[in-house]
Length: 382
Ligand code: CAA
Ligand code: FAD
Image (cartoon, rainbow, N blue to C red; front, side, top):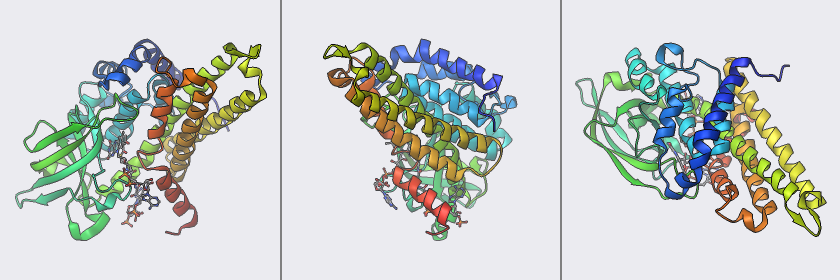
């Protein structure tokens, strides 16, 4: 067993940390307050290889492994979780879908543009009436008989929806076939029939613009199909296995930022004539925060390592996402408490960590869904 990182992984981590420190952290509070999309920073991340970390160099990517992705996303999330949401969706869902299942045309076009930061990708599975129960989707792609698909319906809660240039869409191609009647399409948002709804006003990750997207007779061609017809649901599930590692990495980043702020505050804040960090009740919090942060970090890295080795990792990704998101929420909660009144103030980032942490327990499969995935895989029962 070897817990060390390669030189390349550490270099990518340092690059992400530098951009996070110099470009992302300074504007995180204003992007949060204004709910403004950080397009310039996303372009910069693309120019530095951080929007296509695992994409092969022939398509403009950094050609690195999932452990490198975890290290980079955690650094970005520690500075601002909203940036990490955008980065994770683009890397783990959008880029992986096209790298593994796209045609050469998809790879040289949409994939390359997103990897280089010239364009933004999105992933559209959820609908207003169904998020966890994803196979209940209604968005319909009807074969026109001349090799095209006419798409009608809507998808909700789409990260980067307001600005996306490309969308990976899951739609029903055969309503009688259940989960085997769902197919994936690459959508060009400049084509007729594509629309965007109003931006969702959110509790946290406010800069990662989220909205409904609509399809009104959008025409997709056979070349726009990703993978085989009817295989879209399996594709979504397998992509989400990887995406959940990205969200776990995001949770680790938020948790680390909240933990480090708490240690510093416990050392410098005084009450009753001593640093609050010398009170055993505060020390217990720090110790428990540290344990949860370490567990979340290493479970996430292990899931990423398994993925990079080409070994099964579905259960481990769900374990990592569940553990890391619940750790982030708990640690951010304790961080607010350790900061007292200042933890409740928008003058410090701690209250933002608390609001941002919550989403990691909801998207890419709620904590209840992670428990279902883990228990089903472990017991073989449904
Ligand atoms: N990999 C490959 N195939 C898989 C799979 C996986 N991990 N998990 C399931 N499948 C396959 C099954 O084998 C089955 O195939 P067959 O028909 O050939 O047997 C098919 O998919 C259907 O599987 P289930 O019967 O298990 O499906 P289900 O309806 O019971 O649902 C679920 C299972 C785990 C609850 C799933 O619906 C789920 O994960 N829901 C949560 C949805 C989710 O995570 N959404 C995230 C949206 S993206 C997002 O949120 C982005 C963001 O935040 C930023
Ligand atoms: P529901 O499925 O209605 O769940 C409501 C509650 O019931 C939850 O607590 C849930 O855990 C519980 N529940 C449901 N089924 C069960 C069960 N079988 N057993 C026990 N409990 C259950 N989606 C995309 O496709 N693309 C995106 O880019 C995207 N980005 C998002 C960004 C944000 C900020 C948010 C908030 C959401 C995003 N989503 C995205 C949607 C997200 O994935 C869903 O919100 C999530 O999967 C939960 O679905 P839901 O909101 O419909 O909740």
